[in-house]
Image 1 (cartoon, rainbow, N blue to C red):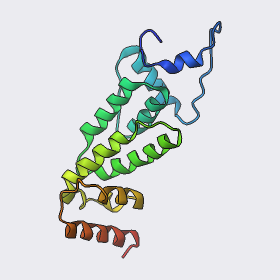
Image 2: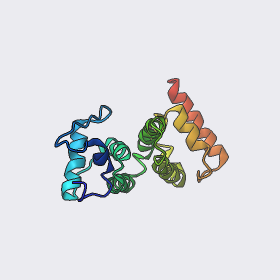
Image 3: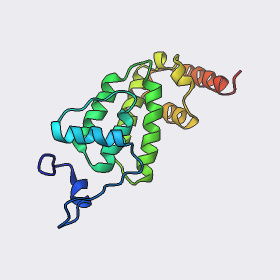
Image 4: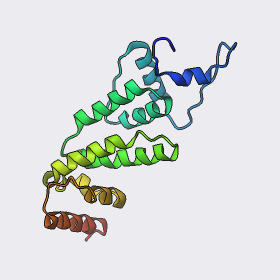
Length: 169
């Protein structure tokens, strides 16, 4: 498999010289996601859905599967729309935090894509229920961006609506 996929460097580290088998333990990942990654390594094909794509993305980060990671990012970007942009931003921020804790630094690119998309479509995205459910950190990241295509007063109103929703007024 190492010959088939140049990015499968994790296998070089996991298999001991002279040993025919080695157990690879990935406690932070689901077995189904690892199975999906193995299928991709053998066939070059992968079936992603919005439910598992961030978990696959994280697995790719951890295993240095660059091609599959980029495929995951492309899948997320293609599925990004006004209705799910805020929810995807929230998920991406959680994964970014996890990657930062593991000293893996290539995660922020997708968060920035979400921020740019929401900024370009701010008037529509700010009207969604996903915006109202954003965490405080996600909201701060979003309104701190220079990419919001709204007047300051509209941003203020959106943040005020978010705050009202948080305290259930």
